[in-house]
Every structure is written in structure tokens, then in C-alpha cells.
Image (cartoon, rainbow, N blue to C red; front, top):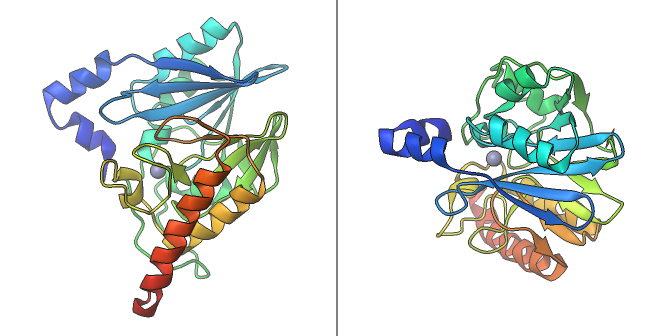
Length: 263
Ligand SMILES: [Zn+2]
């Protein structure tokens, strides 16, 4: 689903989008969650405190730039870098506007998902030849650095977590165990692995490319033993291991059942 079209589809919804305000919550010493439309369709982005300023993770829907910059101002620190967990429109919707206003900030995304930014929708031969899902959106901004598994972004460690998109990444903060998982998990309407439908909030699942890869990626995230799970859609979960285990087990069981049909 193309969220931009969804929200722009009626004047009422687009004005709702403009009028909505950003909810700001702090979690521990380093992590700040910014949430747009917390009731209708909650979309999170994050600020992470670093010695030299702030790292912004994801940029939300179009129209979020002003509220993000204001949130950073309230923190009394500059946004030094902008990292995208993946190339879906509800995560990079305000990238161009932010880049315009913060031209000195680094822009980082995985080398794999960077291709989508300029409209290259091809799959690599080694990748599952599955239909790409979700609202990919081209942007004018070009990344200043391309990320790979294990790279560092300030204090954060890049964890390749393909599945929701081919080049999806999560970011792990070893200072306090916070895991910013993008859409690899959702916590809205119950904790779930990307691709596993939660009836009350099915959108991330509908936008997932490869469920088997998404499941494999969750094992990597679980192995980090995060103290805090922060996702693109839903509340931050403290002490998330049991909930992650349960969500992983549900998806593993579903995929096990689906395997004879080749899914
Ligand atoms: Zn997504």
C-alpha cells in the first residue's frame, strides 16, 4: 500500500496529517521516540543522543520535518546524521525536507535499499524472486554513506535484517541494549514479526517482501538480547525477550505450516 496516496486520498485525511502533532517520549538515557498519528496509524521515528549531537532514525511520513527539528531543538542538540531503516515511504517521507533544512547532516541507508531511492526496483539473482510490497518512494536526497552489516553509526551497530525489505537494517545501541528494529517487528496490536498479520494493524505485514528472511532476521535480533525494543509502528517495549520469543514462535509455526505450499 502506498501510504502517501492513502493519506492524501481525501482532503479530510490530508488536513488531519498536517494538523497532527508529534508525541515525544524519552526511554532511558539515549533514546527518544517521536510518534505521529498515534491513534489512526502510528509512525515512529527516533532520536538517539550522542556526544556530538543526535542521530535521527527514520523520518516519518511527509510533513514531519518541522516537528522532528523542533523535537531536536527541545533536546538542545543538533541532528548530525539521518539513518533510514528501509526505503518505505512512511520511513523516508520527510527525508528531502530534512536534508534541505539540515544539509550538513549525514544521510545513511543500507547499500541494498539505497537502490530503491532512485527507483531501481530490480532484485538480485541470489534474492528470493518475490514481489516487492509496500510503498517504495523515490527521493531527491542521495545518501552520503552506504551501510553494511556490522557498520557503526555513532554508538549504534548496524544489523542487517532483510525480509520486510531486501536491505532492511536494525540499529543496536550497546550502551544500554536498546534495539531500534524498524519494521522487523511491530508492537502495535501485539508484538509480531514482520509479515505476520495482526488483524487490528495489518499494514506492516502487508508491506513485507520475504517472510522466511524476515523470520531469520528476528533470530539475529533476539541473539542481541535487547533490553528495549523500539519499532516503526507501536509502543516501545522494555524487557522484550519473552514477547519476541513468542512472536518468533508464532511466525515459525505459520511458516512451517506454509512450507509444503512453497511460501
Ligand atoms: Zn516498512
